[in-house]
Image (cartoon, rainbow, N blue to C red; front, side):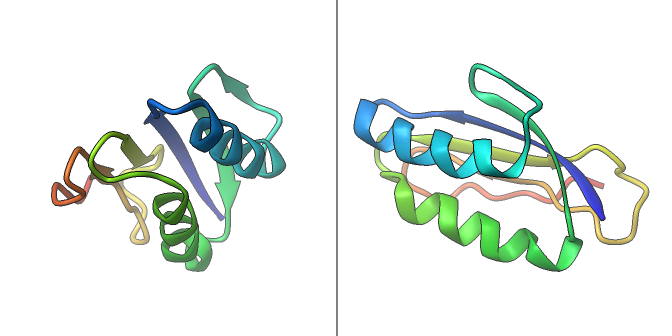
Length: 90
């Protein structure tokens, strides 16, 4: 299992509600736009794809960071305006 922190900044209410619904199904542990989730590491790429499909890359931002950065499956990605900024958190 991977423990990750997900944060977002979504400008449109309808998109924000869809992302919120998806993330609330993953974990009861959240505060506003930050979610502390534990999911199988193999599901991280699919979760990233689901989230970015619900968002507008020209207006919204997303960050996914591993809370166990030494773990070999650690993943961190930041998706910012334009959808072109990605980075790995080690």
